[in-house]
Amino acid sequence: MKSFFKIFFKWLIIFFVLFFVINIFIGMSFDDSDLTFLLMGIDASNVKEAKGVRSDTIMLFNLDKKNDKLSIVSMPRDTRTSIDGRKYKEKVNHSFAYGGAELTTSTVSNLLGIDIDYYAVVDYDLVKNFIDLIGGIEIYVPVDMKYEDPTANPPLHIDLKEGQQTLDGDKALQYLRFRKGYANADLGRIDAQQEFLKVVINDTLSLRNIPKIPKMIQLYKSNVDTNIPLTMVMRYGFSAIINSLDIETYVLPGSPKMLNGVSYYIHDEEATKEIINQIFYIN
Image 1 (cartoon, rainbow, N blue to C red):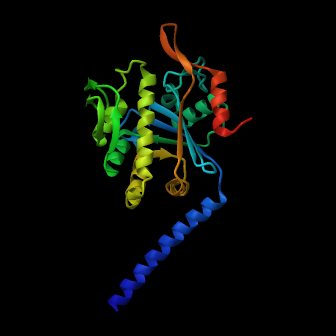
Image 2: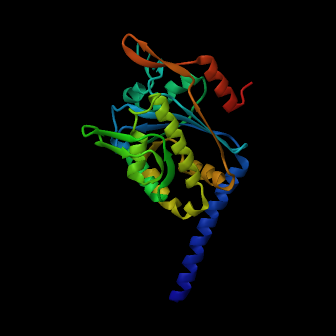
Image 3: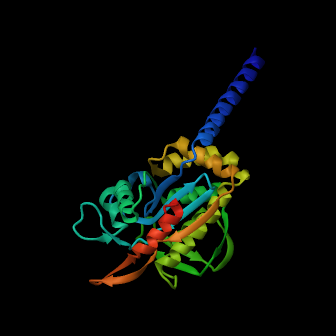
């Protein structure tokens, strides 16, 4: 009798797994629409408790499933733009402190002239735990990175040497949080972040990480504030594993400028339209 129940429950589990996977693939086969969302990284250890903080990183993602292409547009945090409810133009990262992910998403949507339905906000714990989960990443550190700020939340201790190396979760955080040593300031940091993302995405989508998907889902639930349904994440994730992605990265075109003693990044509207048209195939 015990043997019967073992076999029964084993096949019951296999049935539900197959049912779930088949439904994912059915969803993929009939849905070739793009997935567009805004990714925001915040200066906090816990995304669930972060209120009144500014976003540290803002990136637009567009996954074009039909052409197996992922486009990423980084927004310099000092980009000057209009924010709903504010009298004057301000830095785009201020919007998160005023109204959270929803306000930042609508702000970037208005800035770029496109609809952005989804958002995802991640915290430091997600980065650290996720990189440790996939076994670290191999990346080239472009400059010596050394900086201390015990008053930061969490405290900031950065000490990385230039060169190719393996970063665990803690060192990956150091790499991402470093900002004051690049020759071209925030744009240099954006280049480093984009390179980091390319490596992490390619590593994550490798077959060896498939057994880690349940733990990835746990991290997603506990360290990501998002309105993207988990089933949608799974659908597009499996599609990306099966079909190798062509990853293209962009930086919002523009240049730094001082206005009334404040340093801003003024985006080039025409050059921005060209990038958006290229990503979304707008004629």
